[in-house]
Image 1: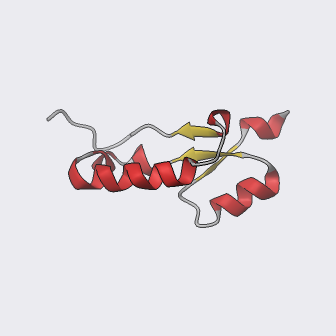
Image 2: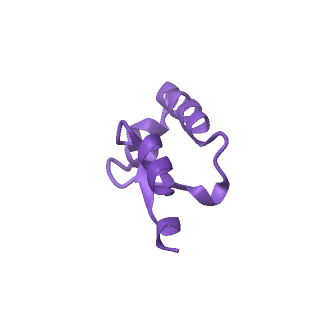
Length: 73
């Protein structure tokens, strides 16, 4: 089934409604920006992601890995 392979990005304000309407999964985009992975911002992002993913089966969620601003500390 094709809609099981489509994920709605959490960047969209209405991602929950769109995913529910079309029966799609959710793509967690919060970590696509490397800045969201450091310090206090990481903690906020982690809490946000946990809140979004709560109650959604694991196969209904994918994580968008970082693609910019990557550097070694």
